[in-house]
Image 1 (cartoon, rainbow, N blue to C red):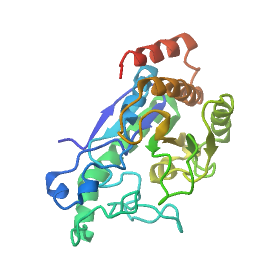
Image 2 (image 1 turned 30 degrees about the vertical axis):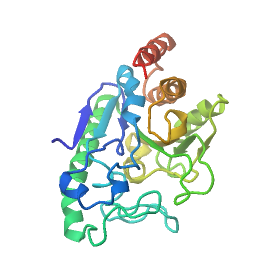
Image 3 (image 1 turned 90 degrees about the vertical axis):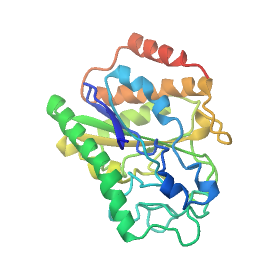
Image 4 (image 1 turned 180 degrees about the vertical axis):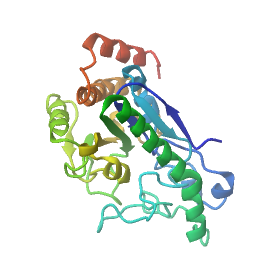
Length: 281
């Protein structure tokens, strides 16, 4: 089984969805606790939610394997991205609930972790880097959009309820101030969703590592509260809620395209969103 799927577009926009995968090899499942075998910390349905980006001409990169196999948004050194805060690692041994991933004595050791990095992590990052290079060559610049989601309440990771839209730009280092300002204007122009920039989630390894505005790569992470488009208890996709959210996501991605070319015409965006509504529940 390939470790990722890459749809190559022609627009200066790459949507990366590194926590969309759900596959766990059987040999690992047997070592995991029952509650972890359903991979509850998946960024559920984000590839479906961002499916309309194909019609905008974006490239889309999605993994097949779960973050429980290896977390593609962590550095290979496993250095903490949020020192002093609870988080999970490169090959997570703790769930977002705070409970262990593995049965006693079944946690991966250094050699196994290194093998997972080579088998699953490096191919994804090689594809990501090559696609960014291709799009920069075509356009002179590109926006890397990191699409994530998480349960709205995760006491192990943060206090209280998370805002609906959590933009991360590594405190402004991973993208131009122009683009950051335009994205904030989109968020501020609507009143259906709460939002914050560089709050609890400032952008993971991918945003921080690849974002280099001086080299033509703007990188932005959006961490969505999952209650905005799905039932957090059952993980069911809620089409009507998702359709409303896609309108804002469409405006955000249009803004990213505006960083490198003319904005997508509004009639085309409406057609794209209408097509996504036909998917049904």
